[in-house]
Image (cartoon, rainbow, N blue to C red; front, side, top):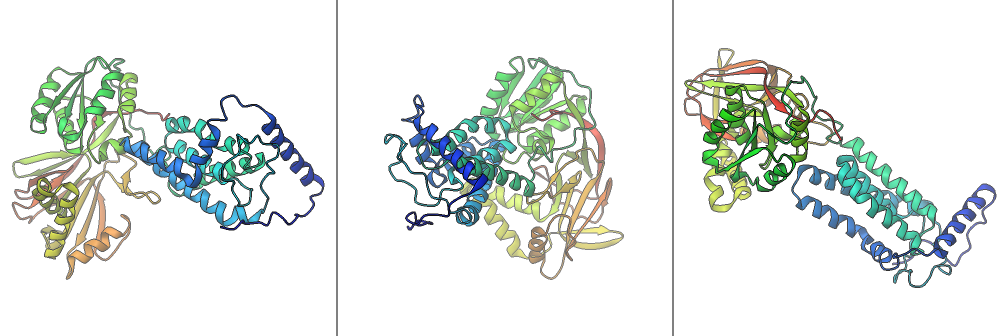
Amino acid sequence: MSPDVDLTVPGPVPHGLRARLLGLDYRLFEMAADRHWPGAEGVLPRLSRSANHGVLWFSTAAAMAAIRTPRARRAAVRGLASLSLASLTINTLGKRSVRRPRPVLDPVPLVRQLKRQPITTSFPSGHAASAAAFAAGVALESPAWGAALAPVAFSVAMSRVYTGAHFPSDVLAGAALGAGAAFAVRGLVPTRAQVGPRARPRAVVPAAAGGDGLVVVANQGSGTAERVRALRDMLPWAEVVECEPDDVGGELAKAAARARILGVCGGDGTVNAAAATALRHGLPLAVLPGGTLNHFAQDLGIEDAYGLARAVRRGQAVRVDVGRFRSGDREGVFLNTLSLGVYPELVREREHWSHRIGGWPAGVLGAWRVLRADRHPLKVELGGATHPLWLLFVGNCVYHRLGLTPGRRLDLADGLLDVRLVHGGRRPALELLAAALAAPLTRSPAHASVRVDRLRLSGVTPGTLLAYDGEVTEVQGELTLEKQPRALIVYRPLHRF
């Protein structure tokens, strides 16, 4: 590697204000070199080396992702995206625009100096930019994680002056550039706090400071143990019933008979069963996400035990819409989506193979088998005519795409069913893929959408698979879908941190 600047060639002589600023910068550098920093000699040089090439921040992001909380994962991804943008800017513009030599190390004690001195230009500091970008990016998504990382990021930035690698102005400019990169990423991809669900319409519910009157049914098959322990710590008077998946329905009914607040911890299917029980008994629902996707809890704004406990203690809740379906003597509710056509077949294929080869490989195999058939799995009567369809999707409330993020709901009480369908054609599999690649609100030839509060489908073949909130059943004849506006009361914090 060769240096970006020939340090043997004297640079231009600065004049006026620039000379005074550079002189101040050098005096601050000498003051830092002369000052004794207690305990820093064994820490800051090592910390500075650990941040080389972003290793420290990539390791931190991996540790955050391993915690498996949605907010921590999003914060880690946002931090890395901010770091990447800052590094790209530093390496393509910053270092080559201001070709400033590194500080002379004479004032810096030998014990502080890095074993391998950097040979690139000095302005701005890439380490400071990466530290500020990662910490700021994380903080914009999760203030708690940002507060924990701020001292580390500050120490990395200061270590560059302490070890003699940079002047103070290099560090300040790098930190400013890193923070700017984090805000630029937020402009491209809004944070959850920016696009959080609307906190309306509010509902009057009991406040339970210690969780008294709250009975939580936790589905052990959804990996809820860690979440349940956290909730018990925050709401010690709450009653928690842990059960196997097959026993969830019965335990929910028992819990509803003695609870003031019905709680549930599990995936979307478990939450669906709890919502149906809460509606029958006229109880408010407290949802603690415990599954894989947790669409309803995410769109509601509940991500962890802390958020739920906060809402329960303060008595904060909203009313949300519920979708209801009826076919023959079968009926049920859906909080997220209902679909006919290819998706229920994918679910069936996945469940058939998952216990043999695992969930993710089973999903891939199921998609391949369904698409390979290249046939129309659904025919329905719309407007008096029969139409072949590849997919019929019905969302409980309108789904949006925000920036580069996937579709989600911003209003859980809009009174609408979001109906989308993929028409049949000569190559339905290709049309399905084309529709999937298009944004949800685009109008491709195979894709159509409408928003209504009620939908009736005739001519559906009995036995056709129907999926709702991750559960699968069979259609028995004419299918009726309708909204129950603001029918369910759900706890959620009304104000962000």
